Every structure is written in structure tokens, then in C-alpha cells.
Amino acid sequence: MSILVSLLVLSVLVFIHELGHFLAARITGVRVEVFSIGFGSKLFSKKIGQTEYRLAAIPLGGYVKMKGQDDIDPLKKSFDNDSYNVKNPFQKIFILLAGPFANFFIAFIFYLIVAWSGSQTLGTTIGEVLDNSPAKSAGLMKNDKIIMIDGKNIKSWGEVGEYIQTTQGTVTIAIERNGAQQLVFLTPEYKTVKNIFGEDIKRMMIGIAASDELITINYGFIEGMDVALDQTIQASMLIIKGVEKLITGVVSADNIGGVFSIVDYTAKASEAGVATLLIFAALMSVNFGVLNLLPIPALDGGHIMFNLYEIITRKQPSEKALYNLTIIGWMLLFGLMFLGLYNDINRLFID
Image 1 (cartoon, one colour):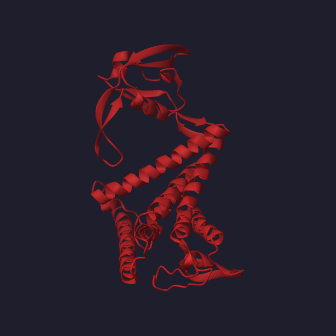
Image 2 (cartoon, helix red, strand yellow):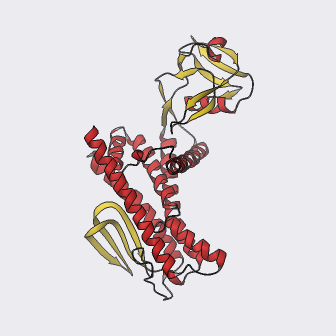
Image 3 (cartoon, helix red, strand yellow):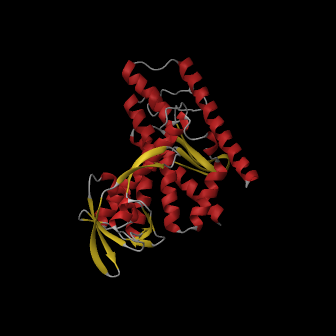
């Protein structure tokens, strides 16, 4: 059941991405010939108007086939009024951006649902106080509950870390201990820690760790939207940094996952509950959006790059360059897919 849920989630994310392209194409007057969820043999198809809607056998992707556009053969064009080829570069970029934008938008909606329905997170109770730390020197103790920092109400453990990073000098922490409130004054110190990419970084620390207490935070209408937008932006920046670290070699190519990893992680998220599944689906959707914007020919970002070239130089790329770059783009994409598949199989044997 969890695998079926994971496939459903992937299909929904693909559908949303392609729906973005579809709507933008129709807005700009481009005929959409095929709207397919999945690849391979057709399981079901129905033609409505000028568009054939398909459900294909392999539910791990999808595509929108616009008149005059062919990613397999970029030289295959049509110059009818309802063709993609006759649109100006700005209209084409609008169509290309609509897919990734749809992914960012649905991620925002997923985060918003979680925020409005109650988001589970670590509470503000201290689980450990490190020796020789500012917290220890100031008298903070295990089971103290942090209520405020410098007069700002603190709801979750994440807010404790975020606020400490922005402080300068001595901070005032209001805590609750044995039912009574008291103030503690301390000065954070810079410490060298590992970030999620394994790099050494400097962070302001006070020497405390969270307990395993989980709390549920219910955000209001406006506050929930702010939280959802912030989480969407943070997820986007995380994916962008991950790609950057991968390119620069900080993160090993062994960490690239394929379709089996995606299905496995999605299945595990579905087993952890609806909220966890929505958060993971939001992260996956952001991932799709960001990766599709990479300037690789055959991806949305590559087509955007070609159109920006036309805007700047006032001429289209040569057919030879367009064809060769598209072939290189497909080779790169297939290389990454096979690397992900190899890593997945390797992990299976190691496990």
C-alpha cells in the first residue's frame, strides 16, 4: 500500500508540473497535442477537443506535447498560428516557467495544509546541557523550558536556534523551571560544527540540546501562509545548495538517488503519517521545480537558456548548435538516471 501511495504522489507531482505547462500553453494560444501522465504504452487515452489525454504504463514522469515542439528532435517544427514555434521568446519562457512554478505552488499548498492543520515539531524543553558551555555557566538545567529570548516568544526548538544565530552579545532567556519563571543571561559562542553537507562551519552556540518532546503548533490564517512561504523558500535554497555542493565535489555522487530511492523514501514518509507525507511531497515538488530549471538542454531551464540567448542576441541559436546541445543534454540526463539507478542497486546489495 505504501508503494502505491508513493507512486500516486509522484504521479500527482508530475501532473501538477505538466498542468502548469498546459495552462500556460493554452493561455498563449499554443495547441497541446498530448497531455500524458507516465511514459510507455498507453493504458488509457481520451481526446477532448484538440488534446489527447493519456495515462501510460510507467508512472514515473509525464509530458505535454505542444504543437511544433519535440524534445527528441528539436529541428522538427511547425509554423502554424497555434504552434509553439511562432511564439516570441517571452511567451515561450512563460510557458517553460509555468511547470516549475506549479511545483513551487503545490509545495506551498502542502506546507500550508500542514501549518493550518497543526504542525508537529520539537518543543522548547532542554534535554541536555553541555559541560563548559555558556548555558552551563549561566545555570540552565535539563528539563528547563525556554519561553522567551530577548522578549520574543519562542514556540519551537527550531526558533531557539534561529534566534541565537541572529543575536549579538548577551541574550536574556526566560525559562520555566518547576512551575516558576526566571531569567537567565548568557553570551553565545562561535563553535565549529558540521552542516548537513559535512562541511565545517562556524555557528553561534549556547550548549544545549532538545529533549524528545513533540508539540503541535496550530498557525492562524496569515501566520500559516508566512510559514508555508518560508518553508518553500528554505526547501528551494536547500536543493540549490545541494546541487552546488554536488557540482563542486563537496557531496559525493554516491548520494544521487534513482527511482527506487524516491519510491522508498516516499513510502516511508507515507507510513509516518499524512503530515510527514505532505512535507516530503512538498520537498519533492520543490526538487522537481529546481532541477527542471537547471540550464541543461532538454529540461525547461535549457529551453529558457535558448530563449534568453535569442532575446539578448536577437537571433535564434543555429539548428546545428540546438541539435548538438539537445543531444548532449539527453546524454547527461540519462547518465544521471543510470548513476542514480546504479547507486540504488548498490545500496540494496549493501543493505
